[in-house]
Amino acid sequence: MDPQRRHLIAALAAGAGLQGHAQAVLRLGLAPFLSPAALLATFRPVREHLERALAQPVEAVTARDFVALAQAVQRGDYEIALLPAHMARLAVADWGWAPLARTVNAAEVQLLVRADGPVKAAAELRGRRLGMLDLHSLSAAVAVQWLRNQAPPLSDVVEIVTMPSVNSALFALARDEVHAVVATATQLMTLPEATPRNFRSLAVLSDIPGPWYVARFGIPAPTLARWRAALHSFVPDAARPVSASNSRLTPLAVADTEALEPYAAHLRRQLGTR
Image (cartoon, rainbow, N blue to C red; front, side, top):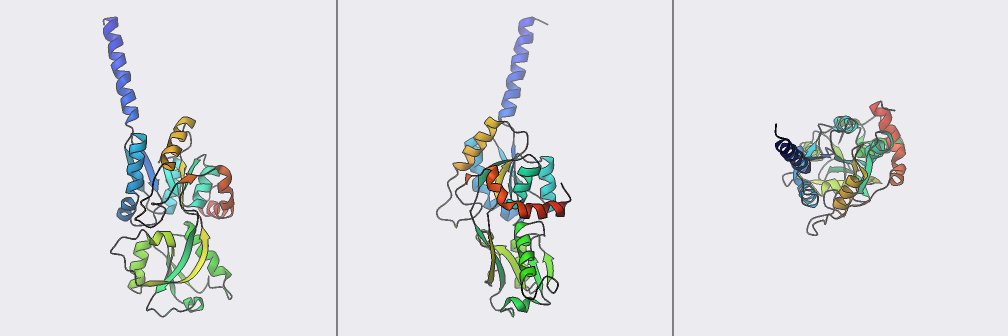
């Protein structure tokens, strides 16, 4: 083959490769606290902002549950993931992920009951069903600890029912399939319109950090810097309530994750990882 032609073909191939690299889809993994359609809809502004800021397509995806989410993070299935803070700590401390950004600084974990229901006090949960996200979520970990800390403890006299999403749990509450639900105040800000809202807060169990954005292991430092800059430049919609999907995204460092180590240690034991 003519050397000039060979060089031209090589240059075109290299150019095509660079163009393909520039257009590579960035996968954004989202913790499954809402039903998939509701979750993808509420995080659409963040996804679209990242597409504009990074000039590349961004695909938002979620997992079946929090165990599947942790497994996907361990495998490196996503480039960026939004994780409950204790799982983000595990990702950073054990799996080599890099911290990127915080969402809301604090979210109340609330115990919700039907506004017209029979439960008027925590003690009246005895023998009843309590709906919550699966036990690997941070809100569930807080709720289980709260049940144990009651006097007398409620952990052995309340039936825990794990729910695939906060909105499905509130439907179950409205149908009297469960008698109370655990959710964070910011999760309630992102409920689909059709979700029943005949509930009230019986108790605030604790404050927890909102979920954190982290980046997959092995990402070069310049790319991490670009991703951090893109996230930190997100402007929330002032007309919408403040939530994990609609908040100013602020810097997150490895040292900031250390406060979640007690919950991360519990999650580590649950998952059977080191």
